[in-house]
Amino acid sequence: MAHTSSRTTIVFIVVALVCAFVHAFSVEEAEAKSLWDTCLLKISPKCALDIIGVVFENLTITDACCHDLVQEGKMCHDTLIKYIAEKPHLVAHETEYLTKSDALWTHCVSISQTA
Image 1 (cartoon, rainbow, N blue to C red):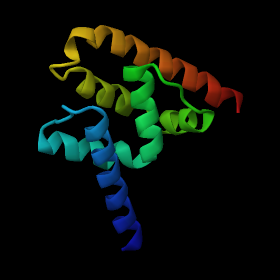
Image 2 (image 1 turned 90 degrees about the horizontal axis):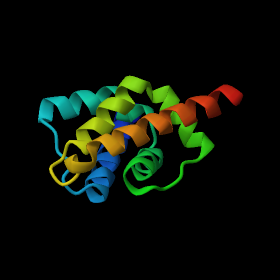
Image 3 (image 1 turned 135 degrees about the vertical axis):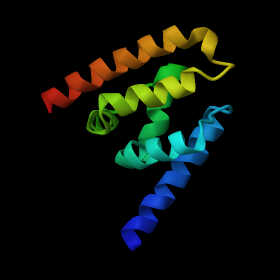
Image 4 (image 1 turned 90 degrees about the vertical axis):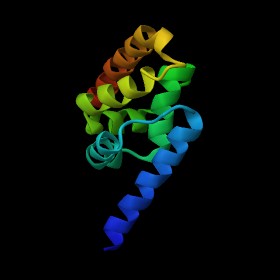
């Protein structure tokens, strides 16, 4: 029970932080639940924000977060970034964000392979 409560807390923290960081983050409720259940629980809230920061704000990422990203999986990473990039105030630069997302994935895979 404590493990489930901890996971639920992490989900709400990630959602709150993502909403604060990317103001228009909203997906259909069923889609969001599916993504959170399968993807966001695999990564820490701090790393989730770092990943969003790299793609949308030109920030940097730690090696530890790269490892978490690779553990999350490419499908989860691509899906979550695409949901954010498709928001009305970001869609004009969607191609740029998706290119940065791919570059981040490639970087993180190379980091994970050297460890």
